[in-house]
Each structure stands twice: as structure tokens, then as C-alpha cells.
Length: 427
Image (tube, rainbow, N blue to C red; front, side, top):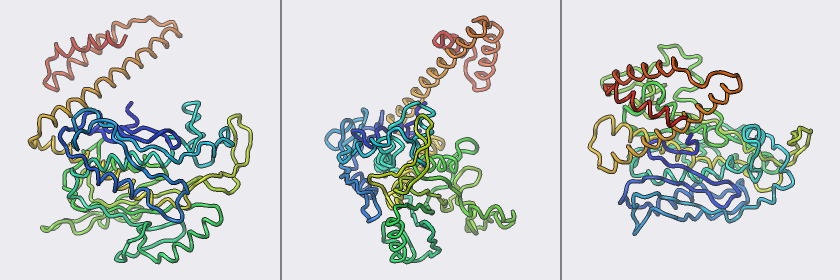
């Protein structure tokens, strides 16, 4: 499965670890002759690297390098690869705890899955991985330039803010008393602890009709994008938790000849945008790396006490804001691109070829997965002394393929012949 893909439509994949050589993105088949957004990319990376007294002491310039796919300031249509090198990595900071699972981190669960994990700052589970997301969104800016995204902090730690008209010209996007906020964060930092918060996102000028009715709902894809971000632990749309107490008559967004009378749904009905502002809230947990003593175990299951040293954020809200914005931009760009296909809008030859390339890649991945399952079935049959061939099942498969092909207005005989070849390829 392409589990490191940021965008299903544009095929953007990410790679790299916190204390590895670099973080990067790869676009396999970008459209050619696009003017490369040098300034926008630099600006996006700078926003994620915003400096505050509560940020990690790790100092990275986040200068990017284009390894391939750009010539004379334009994309060539060939694989586009961009990296940001890790110049201030200190893997030695983690040597003393390499065999101990850090509470709140991915160490334990990833070790259970892979029987190996990168203990150097969390490896790919680190927030530094989000560089790739920010770079990807910068490359898609032109597609969503008309959409306006606003992000404010509704809560940071124990402090809440309900103001709606105060300026947010501060790294925390805080609409309340910033002096009070900084005093509070100073106390948290002095105690060796950390805090998270609650963010509210609002996307304006999103056209109606984006998303799909069932498994590719716009709300579901936004939720997946947000929950893929380290530290994001929850999401609610529109009126959020209030839906639990609202009557149907109260929760419905009534409509007049001039538009919706309210926006409890957060701009999405039935998985599809309705033209209202898209509004949702994100629960952001505190950075798990704290210098206070915590109970845990090591790889052998022995009880341990750990105090995490090194360079960590007291509050990473300022650095996560550009990331959640980036993931919303990527999700909306995907949805807009899909809608363009549905509406039958005229596309370039490269647009069509790009879509076909993505489909071909998905077909190959499906074939690979099918072969893996067939091999597993073979081992199962051998273990349980079952016959290797099941003629009745193959007959049922062909019968089902012909029915499906007919429903899709494809040639049933040709579909059956292709399936025969697929069965051979899976052996």
C-alpha cells in the first residue's frame, strides 16, 4: 500500500526521518511547464519553522534542494524530488534511552508492528516529518488560490479564548490576552512539562459539490488528513460536540432564497461541500517529550523510570498551525481536481495522462497485493493439507467477472480473458 502518499490525485509521496539525512517529497509525474514556486515554498517552510521561546532549541535552516524535475525554473514533467537536509540532528541525545519506550510516543506501538523502530527523535513519527506536507501544499497553491483559510487557537493548555474579533498577529493565533498566555507557558516550561490545545479552522470560498457521497466524503478525507498529523487526536465539524444535545430542528441548517441561515454542519452535508464556510475544530495533544520522571518499560518488558532530555517544544501550536493548513490545502486541491474530472471540464493532454498514470500505478499495486494474498493462501493450503486447485472457485470467479463487466458495459469475454491472465500472474 502507498502509505506514505500525501495526495491520492497528484501522487505526492514523502520520505525521511527526524535524525536521518533529510526530509523530502517525490512527485512521480508532475505536469510539465509549470513555473516552480520558489518564493512560496520558502515562505511555507519559514512559517512552519517560526521561532518562539517555547520551541525546541534545535536550529534548522530548512533550506530546500531540488534534486530533479525542474529546469530553467519550470517543471519538466519528469519525477520531481525536493529535500530539506537535517543539519542540526543530534542522534546521540537518544542513545541512553534507545532500549526504553518513551510514554506517549510511537516507540512501543511501532515496535510491536515492525519489531524495530527509529529511537532517534521518533524517526518518521517525529513532527519534523511535517516538512514534507508543507512543501507539498506550496506546490499546489495555484489550484486553491481563491480559497481563504483562517486558523485560530480556541484553547492552549488550561487557557481558553472565546473572542472572535481580536487580532491574531502572534505565532499562536491567540485572540485573547497574549501576556497572560506567555506567563502561563513560562510556568509550564519551568516545570519541564508541555501543553497542547484546540484549533479552529475555517475555509472560505470553497465551492459547493466537492467530495463524494459515501467512502470518499470530503469530511472523511479532511479527518484522515488531520489525524495523520502527529499530536492531532480529534476532530469535530461545525457545532461539534454540541450536536449531542441539539434537537434536529436546532441542528439543521435551514435554507432561504439567499442561502443558508446558519452553519451547524460546518459546510459539509452528506460528505459534499454545500458552499458554506468549512469549519472544524482539532484537538492537539501536548508534545509527549517532557523532562519529568515517567514510568515505562524497556524492550525486555522490565519496568523503567525515564526523564527525557534533549531539545523539545513546550508548546508546538505555532509550528503545527502551518501543517494543518497545508493538509487542508492538499485535501481541497485533491477534491477540486476530482470535481474537474466529474464536471467534464476541458483538460490538457498532460492532465489526462497524469490521471491514467495514477490509475496504472493503482492497478499495479492491486496486482501486487493480490499476488501477496494468493501466496498466503498457498501456504495456508499446504499447512492444512488442502488441494492447491479449486476449480469450482475459479468458475465462480469468472462468472462474477462476466456479471460485473456486463454491468459496467465492458466486453464480458475480454474481461474474463484478462482475469485468466491475472490468475496466472498471481501464481
